[in-house]
Length: 325
Image 1 (cartoon, rainbow, N blue to C red):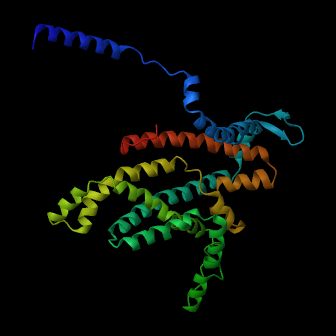
Image 2 (spheres, rainbow, N blue to C red; image 1 turned 90 degrees about the vertical axis):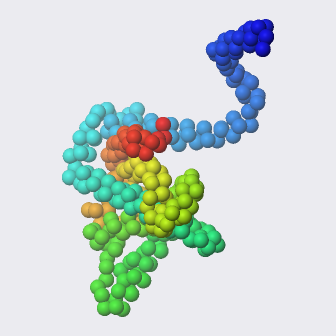
Image 3 (cartoon, rainbow, N blue to C red; image 1 turned 45 degrees about the vertical axis):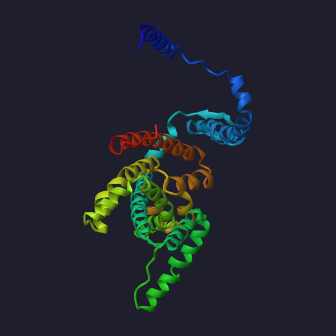
């Protein structure tokens, strides 16, 4: 290599370093609009929905701090500060409702993710592909059914004169009040929700299994590892980060215990264990016209929920090395 070539290479490297150190030129918005005009037009419906359904209703938060007058609106309502917050937490049933919400929601989250994981492992072990696909479809469909439909089925199955109680009576056993016994009702809500979403939850873990190196499983089989050993030592450790992330993410919404399900199936006999924050807002805020208390509950729930999402994201990042932001 000649001296001239070496000098030229050094010169080129210097120019490359200088070029790389220069700030990248930002594309003007007018040019981006011209190149992606169709995409921006597609964003308009979503932006309108965000503005009118999410941003504009934030004005209603002010109801929590006034004695709300329906006729005059917020402008004609007297400012009372934290009066309604104090009133809410002074009520004897407030902490009972919070407890019900956390118990039902936590049960749905933990049991739901665990059952989804186990069901995914079972589906993955089925070698007959047509049956595997059939099982996935059949167990996923209930997730897309409304709780109005599922609730009607549950009343026919779990009601006092339902199929299960008729079967128990024919066997000489006592009837079980699944929907009217306050001690049984929360477990009925948890198990029915888990069964409804089991197939959908399993899809996430089946997708996560595709990221596990199949050569590890094959090598373990060649070394004499049985099916359970391969699941325990290879597949489960590979799914554990996803499992932790899904539970942490779900606990960010621990105060959402499923209003549709509870509202369709509960009754005054089970208010002591079945009434949750969302149904309480519905009964107190809308049915009894106590708009201030309903707004306070919604605001407290939103603030706590935001904090739980941030905490869940941090826990997931530390434990599973996966985070949303």
